[in-house]
Length: 494
Ligand SMILES: Cc1ncc(COP(=O)(O)O)c(C=O)c1O
Image (cartoon, rainbow, N blue to C red; front, side, top):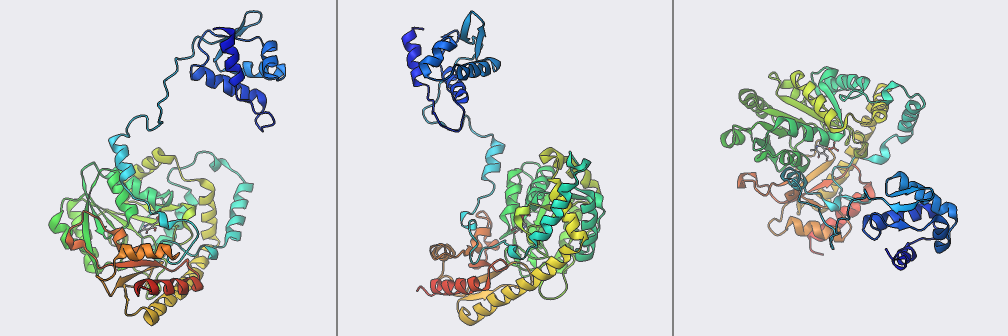
């Protein structure tokens, strides 16, 4: 190569004096980039270090350090007295495309996973009325949690290495006792697998229980966080209507009896808020036992029941070993913790533990330890009681506000549990959910249309009247009042 060309390359090396990155690192990166994009070709001789440092106006040590690093990584060859060359082993550069994009299409399975769940952008950012799915975070005793975690960090033990994929044993033991007392769940710690939120449990269950093309019943309207994993697993999601008694089991049996799995929220249907009646529960269990179908019971917010005793879980009625109970700490503590669990029939538990290990080995150990201490020392029970009272107050405020100011506009669904309230438009079809929701965004409030939970492919039997899901638990009273005011203006077209 002519010296003039080399000088041009050297002159173009982008060195930024005074930048935080040392000059030798910059020189190393610049030469490496020039080699990889073909500006410096294999066999080309680099200037001797003395000359190079003069050309670049840097110290000789800078050049020596850069050469040493490039030689160690195989980009340069050199020997004392012979000179320094671009290595002959460096592969020929790959021509860069003018618009860098995806190297090749995603696999069919990858495309299925990516398309499985549409995310909702209005659901992020600072908390506003009437954000759904959020517990009251400012009630959480962060000081206590901080102390419990710090205590664990001060005493690292062997469990800080790789630990049991099923989760921290003392936590599973405590959950076992809690679930028995609070939800009537029958299990041993060996049946519990700790997961990263219930989302991971739903993904693992869909992946290992269903083959592509298998039919799975899904409540319609229903939770997208559950239909997403079913679709990602290649399942054929079969929407089953929900009425005042919960999932319409007879409809599912009549139209899709061969399904391999059914996803249900029997304690508090998401989003309509109804609880599944006992006859429906028994019919569902009978169908599952007869057809050897799995029932995935998502018991996401049953701790928050404001009137009457908590309802027993579906799992507590299961005699055939077909129910997998899924729980989460996202509602009872907070979602960013990413802690959940599943309780599997004994014969399925080991397979789920193996699948969990394949996915991420195990959930982070210290939050599991802190949660175990949080439960064992009574903070968990106290937090639930305190938060239940606060949620009930906010629920009452919302209900009273609607009754006082929006009674002609909205009819409320069941309000005896959970963190949100379903409200139907009385003036439908005058009000379009999407239009109302967009108007809410413009006025700084979040109004989740019920249509968000609808399956576009569902039969007309799954249709629900138009309305909104209004979160209340995380919303301060003044914000609830403000939200109601804005909602009233939107509905009255002011
Ligand atoms: C029906 C249902 N299940 C589970 C969850 C919680 O999911 P995760 O545990 O992944 O945070 C939610 C959250 O909104 C939900 O609505």
